[in-house]
Length: 284
Length: 248
Image: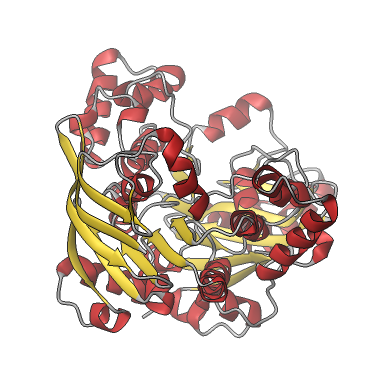
């Protein structure tokens, strides 16, 4: 629907050299609720397309989860949204704006609305826990020192790290490093948060707590989430909708119940971790 | 056979292992489950002398190993094959050379034909086709890299296999495949295997015995059937998460 309206609006604009107000209005209303969109998107790193003509719309306030075999392109989808990769074909929209049809400055501004947690946290080793959170605030906002300290205190409390404020990343556990990564990603109060495997390597009990925290912060900020994970327990806990990225396709499987009942044999095999089926380990 | 007798390990004033005792009988698969940071990896490192316990005894095949000088640890380490969480392969070497590396070092009497034979035998054991032999680690999938690292470990005929979180971070299909492989290898090679993990589902599928560790102490143990019936809150949490992963 969105794609249809967008094309209609674009076609009108092209033909008349001015935007068609009716279509534009419809389109804007529809698009206003879409946070992220991939349109006819393909990406190829030189050895065949990793994603082939993929379409996806993620609504504002939605928690969307990507699962699928390693190397299948889950993280690539996140990096496309974050503007870190350019599609070979097709377009990426963030809040209705074409990411690659705008100037670098406008893109940088748009990116401020986005937070990303990397798989390996990517913390600054030489900065303390508090300074790690302060860094993007000093770089990207005009907040004064009091406001920065206030925000550090707020987010350290939210992720349960108040006691570790002055420690360095290598002095805290893996679970604490994850929580620090989350706090740093959220400190800019992004409207859209991209999580690349937020519980990788953590035990299931710590993982559940971290996802509880992610969801609680999402509700408070009313933000849109896109999370990559390999862990189906976390996918079910997080997702309004799930999609599986496999064989260059992006199969939206729906909520937990719909995913469990999905007819595609690749989905059924993957989510249950079955050895027999169309997926081979060479893909995994 | 591995025996732990009241093993304690402290770092400064923090006690990580608080008096651990257990046996792993010859040929069995023992899983040690616990949350992150509860001392599981420390326990593994104590067996091969990468760390020494503060007090207590560790016996490997009838020999007390916890206070051996470095030089006397070599035969103990030869006996123990360690499989790390990450494949830790040499990026610049082919799959063949990765597996042959330990063979060339530990079996200087082998000629190239014997090394070639043994490498192929080990690839077969981990169910990899011989076509991967000339590939570099970056050219094969992560699951295949894990298999190569297993092949490298078993190539030198260890009697004991130590696994440090072998399925952590893997997708559900690869998790199942690697877990099955651990079972098949252990049985086929008749090794004593100790698996440190936080995957209850994997433990229930292949373990002979499961120990649950919390804050440096054993809080519950038994067969998979015993554990399924456990009332301990931490064990219940682990069981619940295993069910959640199945979509229950």
